[in-house]
Image (cartoon, rainbow over all chains, first blue to last red):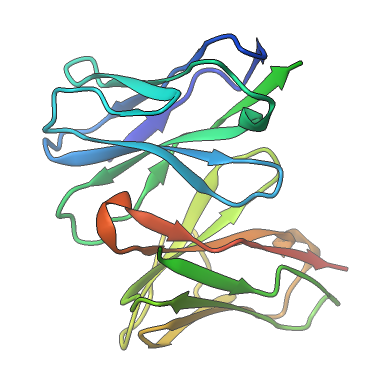
Amino acid sequence: AQTVTQSQPEMSVQEAETVTLSCTYDTSESNYYLFWYKQPPSRQMILVIRQEAYKQQNATENRFSVNFQKAAKSFSLKISDSQLGDTAMYFCAFMIYGGATNKLIFGTGTLLAVQP
Amino acid sequence: GAVVSQHPSRVICKSGTSVKIECRSLDFQATTMFWYRQFPKQSLMLMATSNEGSKATYEQGVEKDKFLINHASLTLSTLTVTSAHPEDSSFYICSAPGTGPYGYTFGSGTRLTVV
């Protein structure tokens, strides 16, 4: 069975600073996708960034980047120049590529608070 | 981009009644819809996967008779909470595999309160 673990229930960062959210996962599959989703107080799920497991290059999206360590099964999210609007719950998620259902498996989440 | 419209956003119902939540895919056909439940400050728990024209697949521990899922068309999936009780109060979210490279499209969620 696949599992996703986020060991930081809550984190806080000062505006304009950099913060890294941790995520580890466990799977025996070789083809999969990893995602970071953001859930602000509105509770709308928003895709932040995604990484294909077969790609060695770490994905980046503006201020958001990942450190994907496939051998270690680690997928951390770095947020640079943190903004107040980044305050949200962040979920790491995993999906087997080509699986029967393509369902997302979510981690427990990290509540990030950006302080002014 | 792909949008999933979820209604209602909030509903309050009396214990023992049934509530239907709808998710419609706009501008794309959703042959599959995932239904999640989320408790406050917790993660999304997958309840079931619906597929157009066939029976839903429920995750272990989810009561099929309590959470009825119907996916009668390529653009509409519904979740009906039958004989609702206060412990069914929660936030329910649907999600469909979207078009393009960005994976999934989520509905805006439904906050159900059973009194």
